[in-house]
Image (tube, rainbow over all chains, first blue to last red; front, side, top):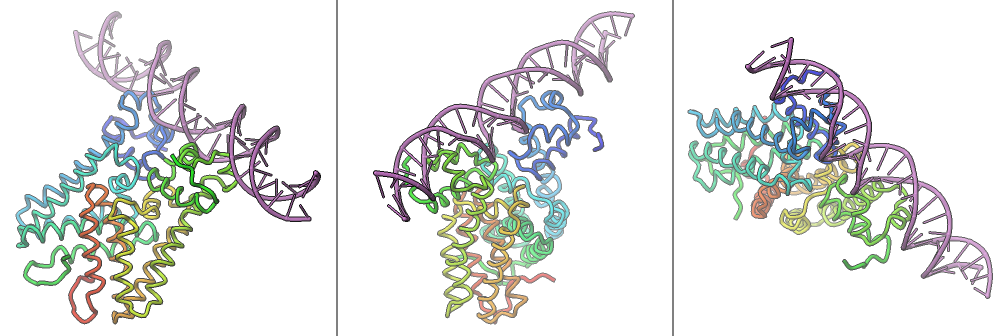
Length: 196
Length: 196
DNA sequence: ATTTTATTGTACCAATCGGTAAACAATTAT
DNA sequence: ATAATTGTTTACCGATTGGTACAATAAAAT
């Protein structure tokens, strides 16, 4: 139980991990206090809004990380193919091959979704639009790019669910390989599945 | 607030809906009591094991429903293609186009996963094997059938996450259309994505 | 050195948590 | 009718919940 917390910003990643492991309701203040080594007094000094503010700032930080490490490169990179590949690599690393849960996806299934619905929606909406943009730059038309991006993101989320349910990291890795293939398959070959 | 609960078995679907809406920890006993109209005394008369037993019996009932309505037909039906199509229809109806959450998937992401890990694992494992079996009977080789089945199930779960996050039923419907297409594409055409 | 300011520990709060006890009413079996 | 069983009500339990008050302390600014 090391107490490495020096600044306020250092506490947010710890909070993120607690929420990931125990969920919003499961992360009790006493648990948070003990894991951060911070005592309720300090906690409420840093986060006057209580648990809700803690979760909300955690979501913001996660979103910020994805914006910098994933979304922006997808939109701005010179080589969209490389950016997509890098996205797959980043995501696989971030989720630690399925052992780490997506907090925002978990919140989406939870009853706390309503409380953070804006942050949750934005996270996925921006991801989808950024990925779509990269796909368009590869040569797909807008509609098909939107479809492919949606499918990729939802596959990643589903892979997290399934690999955790089966307690099998290989499920996640196989899914990521499929996602990567599906994302990088050029617009020329008319393969794949597009509904109706 | 009608009190239609007559028998013990009538209470389980109600419990299921409560757990779906509020999660395991969010479903407090007082909430359960008020929604079932049953008072703690009666609740503990029916479920001496408390909340854990309630959830456990809910999971069993869900699994039973899927076994009868989805898994068994996939394994036994004369026409595997028709069974797969029927699976897609059943699933879309069951999850009410993404508005209804998969309780077992939600539990998999929650910290209660450890408590019900066997039931959660079995639910998905049996689903995957049943779907794989139908795909093999269509003409796929075992490995590829396993891959396709895995991808389909995880896409459904991801679709539930994403469509709930974006609050958009169309996401779920599009995903189900893609799943159906991917599932029914014959083994002859060498399309699709298979990792490594 | 002294006065702000930022941080923390302790004690406390009402409310709710899951769960229990046992008296009570209703049903069923004999 | 009576006895045994099944179901329900009500009051209660200790523990924990998220949150507050405030004094004690540490750090920074003057």
